[in-house]
Length: 188
Image 1 (cartoon, rainbow, N blue to C red):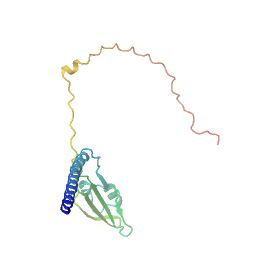
Image 2 (cartoon, rainbow, N blue to C red):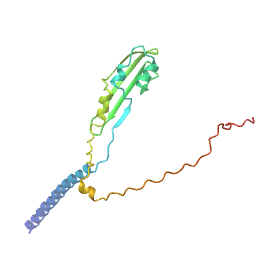
Image 3 (cartoon, rainbow, N blue to C red):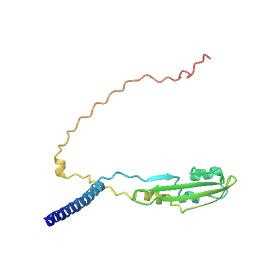
């Protein structure tokens, strides 16, 4: 008899292991199905832009000897200024797209007193290059055809030409006053 109990226990363990394997296999296929559904229903993810975009054209407009105000008018307000380093301004720009790594550009402008001494930083894209990258990761929407066939047009009867409405005779309005009363009372 002990052999029969041992076989039943062994059979029970085999059935339990088989059930566990089947459950895990089911979870795997469920996970794949849920991924497909999640990929079909994905929320819209935006590009995250932070900082000051400085174009190549703006950097080329910088000339040594420019005043701080001229630099501010050319590049915009600096992202970072420091009390401890009053002789330099930092222009930092980052863009994070959902499907790409974060892109970062930095330009540092150095002053001697109130005049521009020098600048250094990353290679900046031109305005047209930057604008071209903004919509490049999105798919082009398909434009529907806006032409109707004769059969489609025949489904809708043509409207009868309506007689033009008689022109309304304008009602003469009161003439505008040539002088207006004062805005404030003169009883001060």
